[in-house]
Structures are given as structure tokens and as C-alpha cells.
Length: 403
Image (cartoon, rainbow, N blue to C red; front, side, top):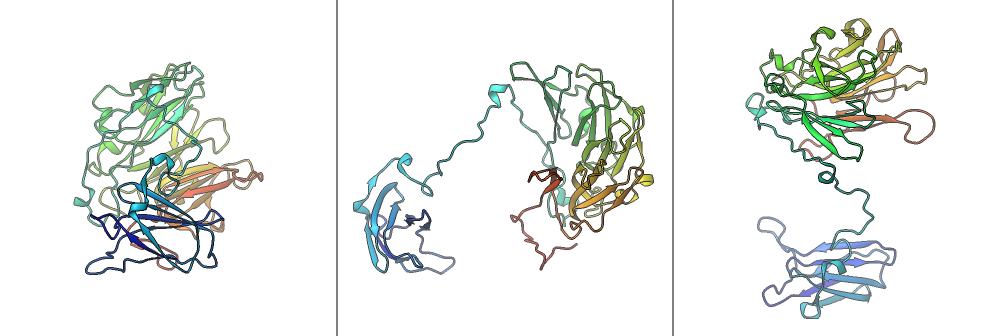
């Protein structure tokens, strides 16, 4: 089917017109009319649609640049169809179908933030990472904010905390019985506002029935030995008020990314995995990761004893715990940049890297991972988020990216 447009006096060639050819099977062809195709290049004014086996009973719709519209029924193929602007008329947007207007569908979600008392705006200083390391594929100073959910004040309602950038405080949102939230800063002092949280965990450190707080520090905007890379632990008094507990954790110093809680040795106390990203100006070298055992209310770094392969596993971006072999013990699954989806098999007294899981071949710029029985067949599945196709490198198995 060829179409010849006869536009208005000020646009006789109909530049910018949009045309849809619809078929009986609800499939369609769509075209926007432009004649130029680059520098000193153009195409003829006649529009050509390849129809394949479809030749009859088509519907042609045209939307002119000024909003006028025409619909032509029972169009046959193998012809030149003349469409004149003077035969069109103005219509409202509500009368137009997709792709001329947004496809009408049942709305699954609606914005309720303001009605729930949530008015959060993340603030962050814009830092040019490339002045420090020009080969970076992306910035490492603007990863946040992170988020964690839990009943902070023991009233049975779920609250949440949003992490902050340096010079600001994380924000606590306490839920009330009517479903609305009350906002308050986690910190009022200047010292704690110097850090940038990359990950947050709410977990019961002491088995006293309330949720304590672990904050992962990171963001490559501080000197490499800065105290701003030290992780912090805070004890909950049961009312949602937190007090620092430096005596209940080892020194965890790295440009971190994530923390995931799990009682991996089944001793009744929740343990932690803390992932490291990359030190300042050393991309793509991995920073340290940590396996922290909860020894009756005190965190201990047991990485080198139980999981030596975990210490410098890669530039970690996310992790999850899941029982992949149905033995009652949770494995640790770790993802990150320039690394495969990596599984550490839980032997209860040690963690061994699983080298024959089938996932070790899937190297990528992984950003996220989640676990669950998605197909309801009784075992745990994984879903992982990669960098996607919208990037300069466009890596593939045939043409991988390397550093």
C-alpha cells in the first residue's frame, strides 16, 4: 500500500503526520512522516507499507500535525491511496486509539504518597567522579537512597527508613493506625550526617524482641582511609530510639554496597552479610566483603575462617539468602559488576563457592537479585537484574566487555 499525502497550504507534503494501518487480527503498522534521513539525505514523499499476505479490509488512520484526524475504512492493498488534509476534522484526544494516544488499560497502581503523609525528596551533592578516575563506566557517588522496612517502635505496624547522602540524615517514617506516616530524622547530630548509607538492615541483634539497625557506609567521595567508610550499628530501646553500639561489632571498613540478614548457622541469632563495592579511584578492583556472625548479641567477622573466597568476591551490588538445595540451610547468592551470579554453598561450618551451579557462566553488570518460588513448583528460583541494553558498550556473549 502506497500513500500520497496532500497537506495544508503551510505543509503541503504533510511533514510530521502519523499514519496507522490496522488489520482484522488487531495488528497494526505505524509510520511518522519525515523526508530527511540525515545529512544531505532524503526519501521520496510517497509512503510505502509492506502488507505481506494481507491485502483487503484494512483501516487507515491519519493524524495530522495540527491534531486533525481522518479514518478510512475497507482499504485494499496494491494501490496508491491519496489522503487530503481537507477531508480531516478536529477530534479530541479521548477519541484516538493507541498509538496516537496512550493505550487504555486498567490502572494497577495509584500515587498515594501525599495522602499517607510521605513527602520525601532525596538530596545529594553532585560530584564529578571522572575527575578522579576518568575510565569509570558510570558514577559511584550517587547510588542511593537505600530503603528498609520493619516495625521499628513495636506497635505492630510496618515502618520504613530511607537512607541519606552525606551531610543529610536518614529519614524514619513511623506508620500510624490509620495507615498514614509520621516523618522524623534518624540523626540530629552533625557527626552521623557525615556518612552516606548504601545499605540498611533491621534485625534483632540481641533477641530482645525489637529491631536493631545496621548501616553500610560507602560512596566513593571520601579519602580512602576516611572514617566515613566505617559501618555503624545501633541498638533499639524498643520504642524506635537508637543508640550507637561500637562495642558490639568489629571494624567493618570498606566502600560498601549492601547488607543482608540471615541466621545462616541456625543458632537462633541473626547473622549478616555485608557486600563491598570498589575502593576510591581503584575501579574495577573489589573492596572487602564481610560475613558477620552474631555471637549472642555481638557481631564477629568470620569471613576468613568460614568463607575466605567471599572476602574479595567482586564489586558487589546485591545479595540474597535462599535454601537452594532444600537441606534447611540458606545459601548466599551474590551479584555485582564484572562478575557472575555467585553462589556460596552453606555447609553450616563453612561456605564453599558453587562452581557447577550453571550460573557461573553468566557474567555481567548485575545490579539486583531476588529469590522465591516464582513458578510454584516447590523449590527456590532466582531473578537477577542486569545493566540492560541502554548503555554505550552493548556487551554480548560474542563480544564481551573486558577491562
